[in-house]
Image (tube, rainbow, N blue to C red):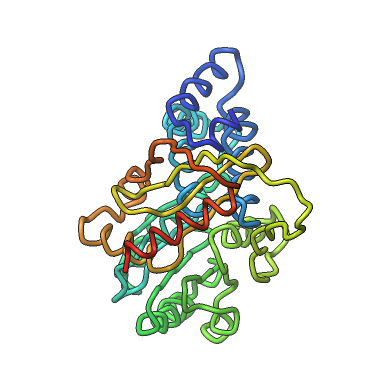
Length: 318
């Protein structure tokens, strides 16, 4: 099951989840040893730049297919006073004036994969809406995201509002492109997640399930071999990962090695703009648009072929 989840094979994950239940495993065992364990590997590989955002979204979608089988059973067990299936309750929202939610959605999916009950209150949320939502779900942690420097300062308004209301028991985490540890300290947040994987590590730390992330820069991608004597392939099979018809990633493999390239920021911006324009920013809608193109062949080693394809895509973009 872990491998199928890693590969993003949702239908098979759902089948294996049901098969594990039929064999007598409890829903809690399937969740912990199957879905959560699988997403933990995805999170580690994302942290080390082995996987990229599109692949994490695809894996998270497969995890949700398994969760759809387990959720009714987990809810029934919780209601009956059985062992709890969740490690904590996380409420996530994007602050007032900011309509970007793709990064937030990724954090939500990875947090659910780590065992949190996740309540996503959406985008453009005021302090009053944060408080009203917290009244309903009683979260252990509130996560706030912002993509714009003009909206990030509103995070302090939310945190101050909760403190003034005497609700200091809730932990606050902040993140987003313009956010830093220094800013998190300035606004009184309890922690900062520099990316989705670090954010989940922080949430687990808040509930006593792990160490705090160090928020060091992500590991760089493995450097290509420059040794002229190192063996090189001569024939490469490659695929392009698309969001609808927009390229996002290249995967190439020859007889010796495999190379993955996440296309640079202009491609990401074009995908985000299209998702916003089409109203496909909700996590399920957004991740459902990723599809691998057909396998194609080209002469040469994987690194050279992948670089050539990237150059062709960049030329077409311009």
